[in-house]
Every structure is written in C-alpha cells, then in structure tokens.
Amino acid sequence: MTDTNVNIIKLTAAEIAAKIAAGELTAVAVTEAHLARIEAVDEKVHAFLHVDREGALAQARAVDAKRERGEKLGPLAGVPLALKDIFTTEGIPTTVGSKILEGWIPPYDATLTKRLKAADVVILGKTNMDEFAMGSSTENSAYGPTGNPWDLTRIPGGSGGGSSAALASFEAPLAIGTDTGGSIRQPAAVTGTVGVKPTYGGVSRYGMVAFSSSLDQGGPCARTVLDAALLHEVIAGHDPLDSTSIDAPVPPVVEAARNGSVAGMRVGVVKQFRGEGYQAGVVQRFDEAVVLLKELGAEIVELDCPSFDLALAAYYLIAPSECSSNLARFDAMRYGLRVGDDGTKSAEEVTSLTREAGFGPEVKRRIMLGTYALSSGYYDAYYGSAQKVRTLITRDFEKSFEKVDVIVSPTTPTTAFPIGERADDPMAMYLADLCTIPTNLAGNAAMSLPCGLAPEDNLPVGLQIIAPAMKDDRLYKVGAAVEAAFVEKWGHPLLEEAPSL
View: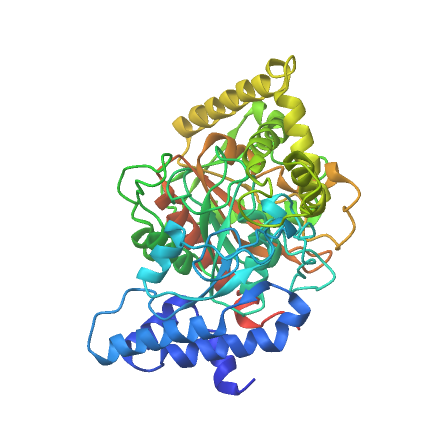
C-alpha cells in the first residue's frame, strides 16, 4: 500500500467525513484506499464474504458529485463501512454465513441498509459471521473462520467476527453487527474495538434475517466511541415496517459522545460478573477501569443481581426455541438451496435433504434444542420457566437502575481464545457470552470499549457499560469519558499501531 493509503485507513470515520466535506479528500480516494487494504490483507483475515468493489466506487463517486454541486453532506458521507451478512442488500448476496442461502441475492434492502445508503455511507461489502448468528467465534460460518488481526490463530469473536476483524485490520473504519446474546460486544472486546447494542427496538430489524426475534438487535461497530455514535444516529429510529420498533426520538448519542463525562454519576458493579472462569488479566484491567471511573468523579456502587447467574441457562432455552420457529421458513420451496428435487421425491423429503445439506452442526443443535423445549409436555418446564427467569433478570436491572445510572462489567470473561480450542465443547463456547446475555434478555442498551491489554497474552480486554432502555446516550457519555482517559493515560494501541498482518 502507498503511504497515502496507509494514512487514510488510519483515520477515524469522523476525520474522514470532515476531510471529504472540506474537499481535502475525495470519497473515491478513501474507498480505493480501503479496497486496496482489503485486497492486501483479507486473504489472511477473511473478514469479508463478498466485496462489492464496483458498487462501493459508484457510491463514492455519487458523494463526490454531491460535494462538487455544493450540496450539504451528512456526517458520515463517503465513509466506508463493512456490513454484516445478515442484512438484506438489493443486488448483493446475503448468505447469513450459511450454505442454505449460498448465492441468494435479495430483491430489496433492509431498512438499516436503506438508511446507510440515504446517509451516503459507502458499503464495501458483506462480512463473515457464525451461521445465522449462532456462535461466539465465527468458526460456525459455512465459509470458513475469520482470524483475529491481533493474532490470526485466535478467534475475532462471534457471531459478528467479520465486522470486528474488518475494523481491527483497518479494512473499514465502520461496521454493522447484530447482537442476540453479545454478538456485537463480544467481538468488540476481543479485537480492541467499540461495539454497541442499542435498546431493543431502537434499530429496525426489517430485512435482518431472524435468529431469535425477541433478542436480535442491530447496532454500530467502530474504532472510537464518537464514530459509533455517528453511525448509531444514522441507523436508529422508528420504522413502521418493524412491529417491535420503538416510536420515540433517538437518544442524543452524538451529543453525549462529544461531551463525555462521568462526574457525579453513580456506576454499578455487579458482584455476579466475576469469579470462577474469569481470566486474571481481564479482571485486573476491569478493576483498573473502575478505579479510573472513580478518579473521573463517579460514585461506585456494589450491586447484587442473583438472577444473573441463571441468565445463560434461560438464554439457551429462549434463543433456540425462537430459532427453531424462525428457521422453519427455510424449506427449499421458496428461496435458497434445494437438494434432491429430481422428480421422484416428495416435498417433505426435499425439505429434509436440503436442511441436512444446508444447515451446519451448531444450527442443527439449536433447532433440535428449541424444538424439544417447545414440544408438548415440555413447554412449561423449559421455555415457560426460562421466560420467568427473564422477568426476574429484568426486575434485577430495574432495581439496580434505581440505585445507579449505568452498570459496568468485563465484556467477556477471557481474551480471544485459539481457533478450534472450544469447537468440540459447546458449553465452554457458550460461556464467552456470560456477561453480555442478561442485557439482551432485558432489552437494555450496552456498549463494549477497549480497556487495555491483558498482561498474560497482550490481547485486548473489553469494558462493558450497560444503561437502561432508551438511555443509550448514557453509554456514549460514559464511554467517551473512559476512552479519553485511557488514551491520555495509556494510549490506544489499536489506533497507534495496526496489529501485524
């Protein structure tokens, strides 16, 4: 890559947008720099499943033409973005990391995709992910795993590992993820990036391929808190096409990110978010972050949320149950893969053969778990009980937010683990989401941002901030303050030097 390209890809999204608006850079030059970076490193990283080179350059040329005509540009106009391959994009493949949708080209855009295009964000392509967003490592993709740019032998998180890896490898300054049990925040934590799960219903799910409809939530991924806020503002807002969309103004997230402060805020620390299974370096960095918050003027409050210990079990009944219902639509009759349709087999046989060939092991596991949990005689014992636990978790959050403004915790119990280490141990894999799942069950907003490197392996550690529903701006207010303090005190290793590739 040329020195100019290297300088461009190191810029934040906010800096890129400002330079394009001022005429110091063209959107085409910015897009070409990131496409060159993808070409140079993505064979090793495998962040992308599809790169839309011509489409991206066409979008960039349109932005440059707008500027030349003197039209006002939006706050992210011309900024490249990596889009998780779970949002439909007209004319571009959407596979959800699964063979069952290999080669499927949607005839319409998801609402989120439309909003990105309307804001003149340049979509570079679609990123790799665990199949149907089921996983914590991006190893469950039918198209092969993604590597963590900090160490390509380790996982980049999941299910949105492609999006987080694209950010950490400087292939894109912005990305989109989805979060069902931590799939935005956990990848952010292990790659040293920023990821936000907005309040459930804050970002439209129309055109997002469903995994677990009461939990799924799209959100922004970036390398800085301000960049995440700018992207959040673009994609959020009410959508009449989504029945779960909240009809209320978007919280002032950008203003909060520009005016970060924790002075006078009450910050909760939950005692259930530590203990056995937590890596020593992760706990050390989290404890340092709590001390830093106190130094910045926050009051630290100890919280006891006993129902959080049941969150993992409840999640792995609710999510598979909803998945078994949602994935019933993949029947080989309407779209996607079709196997065995030779004129001699019944529709049921074709459906069975297609699902056998099209779904991977983890998806099949969750479909079977969910179907069992919903079956006659077991519904109340399993799914019904899990929903009662969900109510208890929501109540624990409500009680906590009467005492504090936000809650903080480690985002993940450990740093990035080696690819293949937990592939044959589903329970060990599921524990990666121990800290993130309660927020999805309650529908609150949460963010992960870097809080240094673990001393034992020199890999990123994430700090999770949790806010009440529709108080997403608190995430950015606290996150921006912590980020600024961390950079001043220890620097930002990801922004100062890209991981070696």
